[in-house]
Image (cartoon, rainbow, N blue to C red; front, side, top):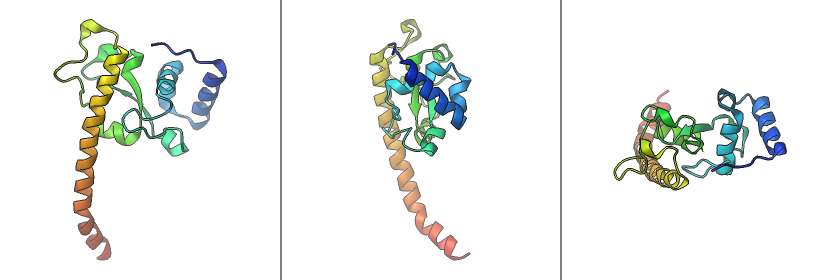
Length: 153
């Protein structure tokens, strides 16, 4: 899927990235990252948080490998394998592989299709929802201990 990027939008995004020194936009072909952002409207594909709502959100956002690079290096330059993600989702996901049985993608299918991307994103969303719930339960269980420790200072 190719997205035509109008020159004013591309120039604006590159100026923003340059002014804020958003490094990952410059570690890759700038248009590559911008295409991913535009395709997903500047939202984290996993939790729908706006990645452009604040400077902090923008600075801490990532262009994630949907299928992890460590297992699928052949997809490194596939624009559909790179998706915008907030820091929290990207850290929870890490190198988790959404391409479990039944497999959505295999190397004979290069490049990744829009349908495969959509299914892999949905699988990752479900996984991250469970991980967030686990994180919240652990955090909530620790609150009384934290409170007691802080009061003892």
